[in-house]
Length: 591
Picture 1 (tube, helix red, strand yellow):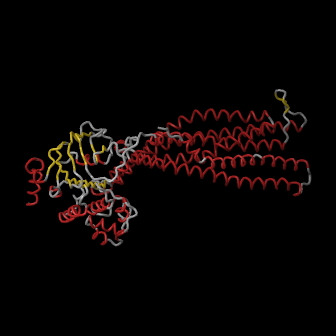
Picture 2: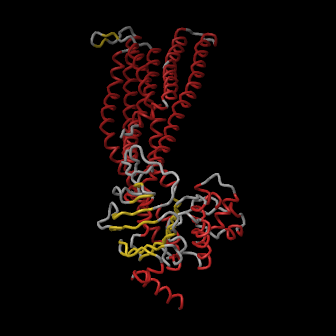
Picture 3: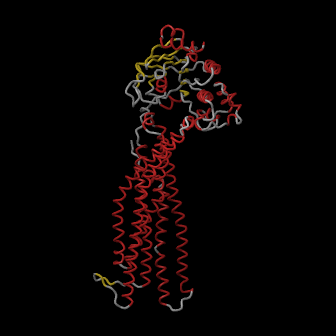
């Protein structure tokens, strides 16, 4: 698999970068003419006793032209480079989102959501900053320095060498400091991940925190994490500020030396005794000194920019490495070469001696599971908590890789099936009944966004939730809130059932999806399943025997193994677990 590199994104938007860089070079070149114009004005004033506007008008005209070029050039360079960096940010987030969709459940078990979100926000923004402003600063630092130094050498080589010594030392020192900054930024980002994780977990469990009146306890815990994050931030910032201060000191010392030496050279030339160093006559007039100081002043920005570039690059390098690790993560769940596309699915499901253990688990969740569901059958799945019911249906969705020839749909190994076509043929109602922060209409039509309102209502009636929805002030346009927070548990379950039903798939899986509704509603839903999904395979995981009592067959799981698979009537004779569950629930009903 090709490794991710930021160069690919630079190349993708190379045209915008080229436009911006050319404009930046033109701006840098134009900027170096300003010191020459200042020197020209000094010459005019020095050589004439009575200076009139006409004498300096050509110089002023040239300054205005340069100002216009600078204005237009900076607009173009920012349009080109900053637009390109914005597109890199957008494309990077897009690619990361696509990657996130392809990663397996194992990855999300091992990595917290808050940490992943910090990669999408803080790290991507760091990349955008460097590819945008960092590129502008690098171009400025290189070309403005080259042009200015070239013109300075033409004026006086000795003064140029004096000016360049601290700059060269600064570059060497900066390269050494960058490694320290990278390490500090890595520590800062890791601490930021912890802050993100804590915040995300707190907001997710805010109702529990309030119910147990633990606001102050959580506030103290958050303060501790936030303080550690602030300390890492301050550590990095202090180091960066120290470097900026040293740069300012070096710049100030360089300018002082330049003014002192330059003034001395001008004085010696004015009295007819110019300075000679290494057989080099220093012919430095007042106008040349002003021009030289102007070039040096132009070099101040690249020196300051160098400090900012090094800081940006240290952050950029750390953030890109974190992003690369995410984008280069191996995708475990992939199609084989030339997979089988599942067409005209009949709904036959076969398990052949299937065993499964989670990647981070030490024991098998399912062991030697063997049974067959015929096309169009309604099958219930029961068992104690932790018996492997949810693991069983998750295996059907190919959320994990499994051994070959262990699970077949329509006599085709699911490991050979195209993953998209497999999942297209299965409608799934998850145990947690997850709803999106959107209106009810869009939540139900999630699998079929072209569904008309009458189809959506039909699905809601199937789940016996239509009357509840139309009682809301905004009906089907009612926003459910994050994870369906504005709805009751039973309403969320039924909307999730309606969302699965509208998909109209040959296979439908309901994972304990009627546990939060009353008996009458449950009976309505089960009746609708029997009537409206006739001829289609339906698997219902249940915690109540009454839910599956009228199914064609029931699978009884006990500690990850198949205890029995038969009709409800026969199970009372052959399955101790089913018999006990039935007896206990009958007692509960009588009480």
